[in-house]
Length: 244
Image 1: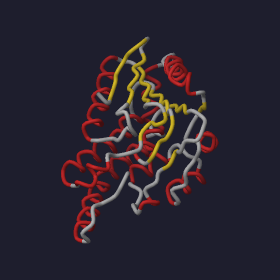
Image 2: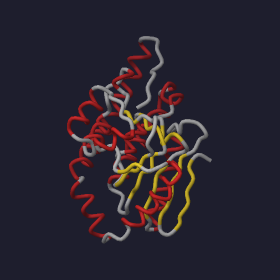
Image 3: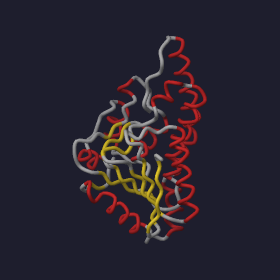
């Protein structure tokens, strides 16, 4: 099992662990969505985390290279998860235990509060570096969290940030040692549960309305781009190498 779900003291921990780099396949993303469904039904806060050293390295490259409907389903589930997290009616804390690449970096900035561990780790939207136009959805979630200058560098230049640099520009809200990351994330989630729940949920939708609308508009266009890119690569006799 790649996606683990546990509830303690009104906090659900959703943990990704495939024993490797936590590639986000369609099946994994379906499990994550189901875990959020369960948390919403149970009325609990969420801590989304990964395994030692990595939150996620992005979409499953094997599926991307295969193209077709499987790749499109995976992209749709992944991109829609960002909006799901931003609009989730209960607090969402992301506990990043290491690297966050591409789609993993989009999830990183889709929570209400993000903790990470210091060290030799990379937070990066690396699409431009590997020959891809940054998806609209990714651009919107980065824009709503990063400082303006850092957003431009992250999106246009694929600049990689260390956790320490990420703290300064908005990728991360707090750095904590790895050995206490999960405990601190759960404590933060419990702290946020003390907020008025109706005001918290309604204010999320109000202040993020522009971002959520842009995600809704951009997602189908990103899927069209993915199809067009796959066809172009097929005509060139190449398999698309992407991480998005």
